[in-house]
Structures are given as structure tokens and as C-alpha cells.
Amino acid sequence: MTVTSPEFVAGLVADAEAAGITGFVAAAVINHDGRTLLVRRNPDDYLGGMWEIPSGTVEPGETILDALYRETTEETGLTVDQVTGYVGHFDYRNSRGGTTRQFNFAVTVEKTEPVVLTEHDAHQWALPGELPEVSDAVRGLLTC
Image (cartoon, rainbow, N blue to C red; front, side):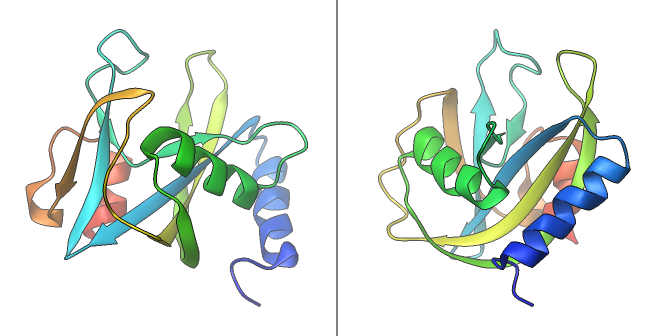
């Protein structure tokens, strides 16, 4: 079963719902020349100034993979070419006090430049051993 199969994605959702998770986020791990694309949250946002991988909320009626493609383009201007793997998930307390599960997928993009930010104030291509201020969950994801 591939990570892009409806059965695999449905299993991710079922596991999250069984754990009482109320929000879903899809995230893209985009690597290029040994570096990972990171974006920085605007200072006035929830967790402002924190670096993260491009990600966003799965909207009602949307699959996790639909959200992955949409959010990657919306946040970076980059177009996902292929989903190459599922790299795990982590849960966190969201700004509304609920629990969100972030599903993380390794992807390739059609072109790595230009990165056009709409929701963040900076981006960088970071080496795993030289990450800026990221959450422990993101650090664990990128350095494992």
C-alpha cells in the first residue's frame, strides 16, 4: 500500500480520530541539495518567530493529501510534484486549546525557486545539523 493510496490516508485519519484528535494539519518536508525548506511564522502569529515546515489545516471535505498540495502552494508558491513518503506525525496543542495532529510527508517539487511567502516572514534551506529555532517535534522529524 502506497502512502498516497486512499486506504493509507483513511488509516491515518481513523487512528487520529480514535486517539481523540480534533484537528488535522498536512505538512511538506521539501529537501533540496541536502537541505530542508523552513518557513518562519510571522511575529504576531501564534508561536510567532518559530521556524517550521510548510503546513496547514485540512479543510472540511478535503483529504490530507489535498491539503498537502494546496497548503504547499499557498504558503510557498511551490508546486508538489510527487509525494515520496510518509515521515510520521506529531500532536500539539493548537491556539484554540484542542489537539492537532500534523501529518508529515516527504515531497518533491517541480521547481525549488522562487519561494513566494504568503503567511510567513522568511524562509531558508537549512541543513539538519544547523536548524534555527524549530519545535522539538520538527527537530526530531528532520534529524532522525
